[in-house]
Image (cartoon, rainbow, N blue to C red; front, side, top):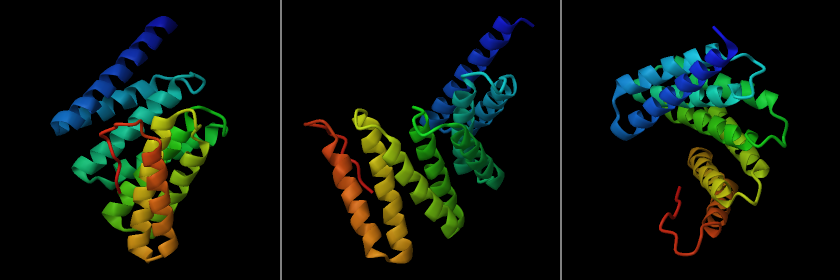
Length: 193
């Protein structure tokens, strides 16, 4: 198989896997998320480590694993998603444009696992990764920053509810206010935690 054919196949698999993942999110058919994970795993397996698109494919795979965990409650899926996100973060320098998004995805995976199993280390790591995602998100991307601040506020709210530390509640309110302040005038999408 030629290099062009391999790259074309990988691109097609990634698109198909993302399409199946998106359809699962809209329609809830578990078969779609099963196929999405299988398809994205095949795309990842066919992609060399030096390929500049590998991180995108792995990010898509980890997100699909996270969704499959939420649907089927297989702990291996969320553990694998977290491992993939962690591996991606290790390879991104702080200035890499995909690092904040990947940190945010990792924080959400930790929070998903915390909410299911109650391990406070997952809660702590989720908040830590979320704070880092906010720190690294440029101010010139207000929609991404607002979303990450909203996620941080929700995670700090969980932290407060679990530990009762009023400082976390104050930080959650501050993050939420900052998130709302980034929304355009007249926005009907008001985030909440």
